[in-house]
Amino acid sequence: MFREGTEKVTIALSKRSVDSFKKEVRLHGTQYQRMIRALLDRYADAAISARRLSGFGEDYLYPAQRFVAADLPVSTRRAVLRVA
Image (cartoon, rainbow, N blue to C red; front, side):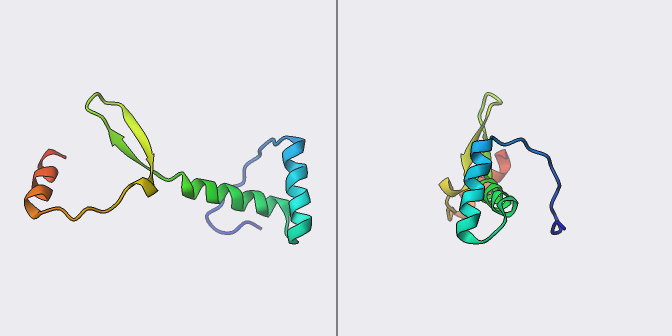
């Protein structure tokens, strides 16, 4: 059975991809469906991105790891919040 927070989907993969996963699971002693789920979960986690809206209404995706926290002066924070 699936763990909580999962959704069952149907996906068509190339025979080459499935054969590759089946070869790997024989080496690691797991199930190929479990390995595919883990790979997709890791990909989704890495792809979590922040959106930046340009002045022209276009948005751009940037990977979350490209962002760092900035400690801004109070006056700057207030100014940013006023225009946000």
